[in-house]
Length: 171
Image (cartoon, rainbow, N blue to C red):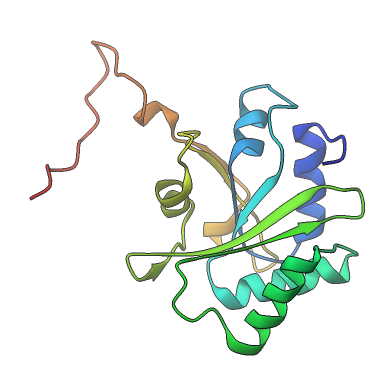
């Protein structure tokens, strides 16, 4: 990875993805929101549809991004055959400045992850519980670039705070 602080990386990601809808999760967002500018290693962008992943991937390639030979074969296979029944589909791009960007399209319970909350629920094994909606040129409200910090619902509640609703126990 090149030497980027979190803010510089976010600025570069916004520049590179302008006009494309995606959700940004992972350590980069947590590092930015928690004032830890170098506590991250790569960028995790989640696409709401497979065609969005392909369009954004093609856009990154047109911006000078590359991927290694392994991902070159994955990309060619996806373009020729689609993703078939895979639940998690990811590919890593490297920017000309050596920023690593992972594009991910994920299906959970048979449905694409089409919101930041779904992305965090299905991906966030590190319990970072933070993310950004990336603004797209169409200006959809669901892609407005807002930061979301959901850690409060995962932390122990204080005595005077209302209890967080818990899901019912499994069968």
